[in-house]
Length: 509
Image 1: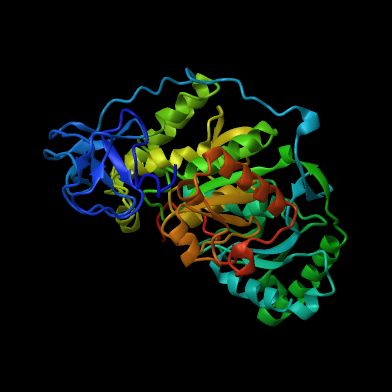
Image 2: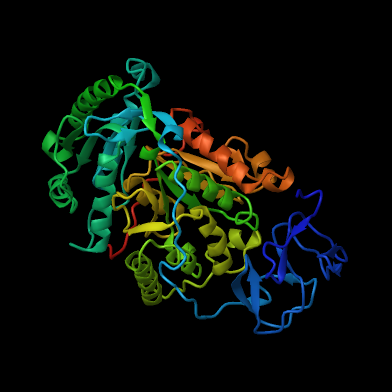
């Protein structure tokens, strides 16, 4: 089916709304019964397929996305003006719907060209990183990185570049609090990340998150690929930059000795992210990325879903696929924590977070969650991990992160994701280093409007009739090509050096 064949779609036979695949004008007939639209319907938005009395559930994807706040007549626009949301019971049914994964036989499994590190890890990029322990040393970290101009980098042809990253925190934080723990976990995850051939850890010398404190808390220790430097001990900016340039040069020499070689796709960890969603996201880009995640998992690899607030209301679709009751209940515990966290901060989880989502046709957080969860594909949920916690089990894993894209991507990268699959319907220019971000446009208009940022046009599912599985296979091919060194749009645009953003919880003192 294409938009030329049918300009609207009913996603499930139980749905009482249809989605406009392009702008529809008043009096246009939709549905098999020839329902006439009572008003214009913007692209990506919903129209009622039958009368929905006040208080009755609004159904999309075969699931409840909200409740009619007043009587809705057939053909009427269904959106925030006539839909509300309140609590209702959903059975988590932990582990009841799990099914065996159809793994690809070993001789048929795909591979990519990656970097094998001496500790056994595998990388897909070959950067040298400068990680600042505190905002106060981030400026100096960037001064060091700037010394490695294209002319200097030409001496190290196998290296991908020098990247300076650091937090907007690191001091005046609650001692022993969650904010410090998350910052240290994120920095440690980046320091160990296999897409870095080497890392220089740079501190100021009087911050709460001292270099030695970070090392002690995370088990990191200086070695051939991890060096440390403290500005106050070194004698100030100029001498620190001089010493830093020397240390980074040594790490670049280490990186330049690395060569790509065949690596099984089973070694890949793919982060799953969405941002700036629209009414098409849950129809095209998200399920297509889910199909690609299924393929990676069938080849023995790992896909990591994140953004706990943005699966809220749809978490039962994951808990039912959990490999055990313990895994399902672990996800349920994180949902309850978020409810309490939101409440004590005067917020609500059952609220659509962004105006852009609403403008794109998403009415409630449940609707967004049901579309977002499609990124997880169809395999079993094998584990639930905390923010920036290392991902160690192959298969589908959930990481507890906020819905804010830079924070979520930071957690995924720190957890070991080699690259990020990022779906968007409104448009995003987020990049991430050292883990490249593949952008998947949910509609052709976005792809055509932002061609220098979008890598894949998932709008072809509707415009050309490609199946979700066909699009997923193309995304999987691009994942392997990217892992083998192909530069994607965000890398070509130079994005990704300012998006390091650990989850900050706590008081700034």
